[in-house]
Amino acid sequence: MAMNRIQFQSGLSMLKFLKDFGTEAQCEQALEVARWSDGFHCPRCNGTAYYVIRDGIRKVFQCRACRHQASLIAGTVFQGTKLPLTVWFLAIYLVSQAKTGLSSLALKRQLGVSYPTAWLIHHKLMQAMVNREERYVLDGRIQVDDAYLGGERAGGKAGRGS
Ligand SMILES: [Zn+2]
Image (cartoon, rainbow, N blue to C red; front, side, top):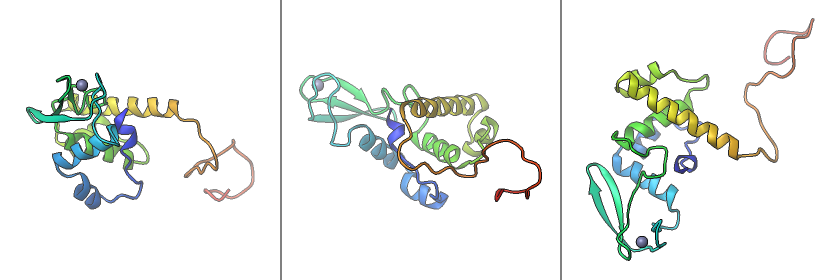
């Protein structure tokens, strides 16, 4: 799924995020590169020549060869959404930056959307992350951030050092 390949660095500041993904055109560009890293390929005939047409705010690619129309968001976690990609990208940013998780209510406040919308975004993103985790097998040197291993032990000092 496309969002898997749009990576926000863990240390990405909000200012930098807004500079890189603050407009619909920037988000479209990022999604386009994530879907077709070597340019558009028609899902039907694999043609690479296309026209760009618009369906409301949505970018749609029309294949020049077979005239198949492929929406930029079709087949991604954003499929079917009427929200601007900027809202989704900001949601991904907020969820990915929140170490201890983010509630749908917090997302509603920060995105300025209704609670049902925030809830839907939240659940779609969480599901996409679960799907992603299932597909990856950790390999090489694994570094775990702020983890506690094992059970309780008497004595010893309190805190992460122990
Ligand atoms: Zn085609």
